[in-house]
Length: 261
Image 1: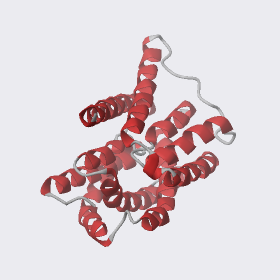
Image 2: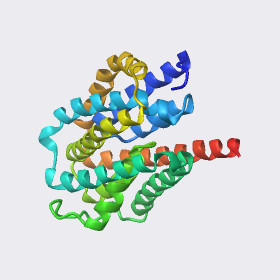
Image 3: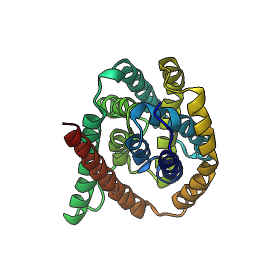
């Protein structure tokens, strides 16, 4: 683990608030920026070690809050392949370039957001929703939710799973609930893996513990947002955030690669 500086702690504290707000308000959207921000002032293993315990605590609390809104018919196939993606990521952890992965995910986020607004400007204000959440399209489920489990181990996993969920046009609270429970399961599965890899240590757990008091404020703000926003504005905001997230990941990772070249 890299040295913990005041700058690191401030960035990590902001990331915890940001992720808590995102999980409770948008199911994780823009919270994906938390891991890259902390990694920028340390490294990927340190970011995982410090943030993962806080993510798990957030997941438990937010999963309880949204337990009555979950569409479990949709969730269980997603969770199955998400867990498979996590185990695959653990096997190839030392062979993946996180900056290259971040650029790929950023491009996916950016394209999803731009496509949505292109359709709206072209008069297609509403996409045709997938009617039955109890009959998931298996090729999409495997590729996108499995991809989210895989990429969440390194950096962020929201872009693929949101590409999977957005066509269902779920109500905002159901959308948030499914995302929250998906990452609750996926992150819980990571616990024995990161412990066996030695990523989480006693020192990193103390830092995570110091960051926990920030979490309830972010959850409260996110919950307030999610329960007071209508369906159509909700999806406009979600796609705007996809554009912001995608642009940030592409720019920051491309900069890191150019500096390291």
